[in-house]
Length: 123
Image (tube, rainbow, N blue to C red):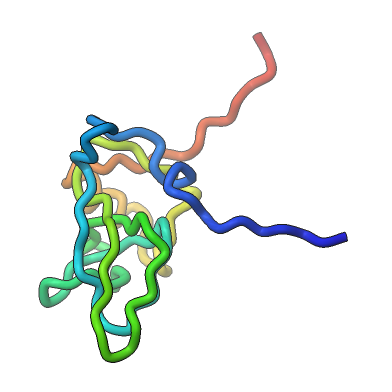
């Protein structure tokens, strides 16, 4: 039997944002040449361009696109850069960084990291 694996979509990561129709929390940014980012990647800004976060305290955004910046040229992608918004911690790529420090850094931008609520069948 064949197993189908779906890629992450924005709604897997982003659970709520203020002004959904206005995209207040999102911005398009340049991605550094050669960076491979996917939806849910924790990112930071280095030399004015987005990269996968390498220092937990520098986390400043979450990638909302699957983007591969080609070698030799910068790319671009949409990022979640401010809140108020709520994201699903189970869908984030922390890149082996300390979760608590990353979450605190993101909270400074109004990006709240929460676990996906479990639905109960009990009434």
